[in-house]
Image (spheres, rainbow, N blue to C red):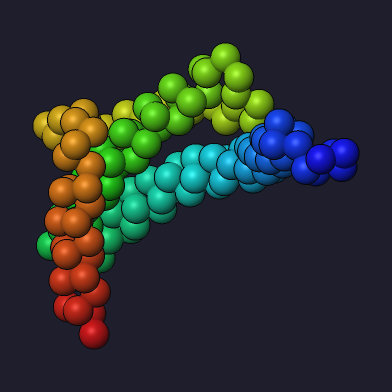
Length: 141
């Protein structure tokens, strides 16, 4: 038992050291992914509402369907924005803080539609919207 690696305490300290190193690497990676997610949800909202505006001139029934989808996605994206804001405010957050866009600006076109969604509704609504998107995609095929 005169070798350093033979000591149980030394092995445990070494294992914890490497876990901390991996955790630091993961934090760096997550900081990148957090920014990507935030950018993606902002871009999705902009793209969907721009599509609705373009369709209103050429195909009003399709614009109505896409608008419903865009409104639902916007509500889901707002859930993610709130979660990201909570993450940004954490004391130990080390990533770049992305400015949160005014989440109600583009949705002002969605007259009379509530913009709040409960977090547990997120998955259900996403599933429903995916089925609607599949249906719309099949209409064009």
